[in-house]
Image 1 (cartoon, helix red, strand yellow):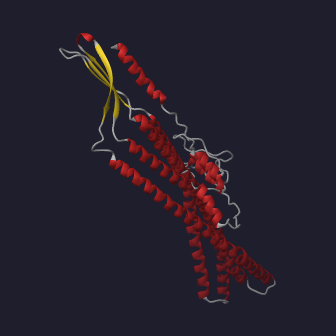
Image 2 (cartoon, helix red, strand yellow):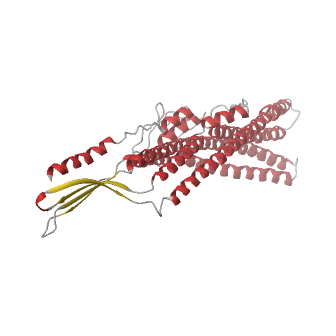
Image 3 (cartoon, one colour):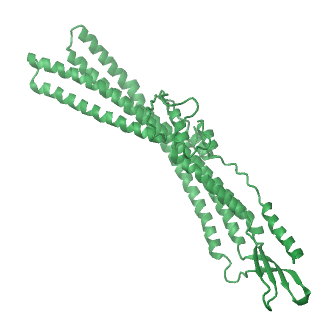
Length: 436
């Protein structure tokens, strides 16, 4: 019995060692870094509260790119998404494993002879390849989806940076507006006492000042909210330190032609790549399901027969695919292939729409910024300067100078809004194209 069993046991022990060793080339962090041009961290520790990219740290003013880099290092949801890649790796390993052989043994009790039956599933040899390929496709699909998640984190960090810069700029302009209107109110009060204006004119100046103070209080509260949103976007919500920001000059250069952007998006978008992989994975699953017609096992039977000792003979145990030939799962897999193909075409439509829309919004924002910075603000600055000169010559009252300055302050507030719209549009266009 020992001589008959040992080769079988040795065979069953050596088979798992023949498993294919998978080399998965998908690295989401590298893909995010190559598309964004930003430094990416190694896999962060779950217990790590915060980390900073090289050259950055607490107290260093952050540009939009700096903020995006910090977000990649600290955004906890992104790191949680990256951790799911380990689950996909486990599924990939499981797909390559062979099923364990089954050993049934009856002891010789009474008239019952000794009997041993070993079953080893052999259908895995023609199913395993397709099953592993499907798992590899699923792993690659998840990796590309995580790249798109990282690009979304970058866009959100840049948006949060822009919102904070805008809030601080609006607060500064609102502070100057209050100071200006306060001086106007003092002058109107003096003129009222001198009898130069009516009480109604003085009340209008006071109401204007009260409205400016209310706006300053509201914008100051918006700054506090924008700081917390910025801190959360960077993954530093639990970091008590101040996070200063700095604004880069607004780029007013025209974006590339739509055809060039679309071509780049079709080649760079990680979600498009993931959709292509989904089609391939669904096709592999459909092929795998077609091999799952029945369960087939190789058998090795050993039985004690009278005085002849123990006789061993091979055999096969097979499930006859008469009624169930896996028709349902095959049909489902074929339908999934069609679904993934249609989803891919729908995603291509959405990518084209997002690129075109982001480009048009950027052109619109740049045109508005140009009108303000070229047509409106120079004229208002010149008017305010002339009013100051006329006041110095004694030709106009100082109240006229303040009124012209108030129009300039209001235009500067609109300029800050327009610059923020351009920055957001650039961040959205880069996300829509899928690379910097």
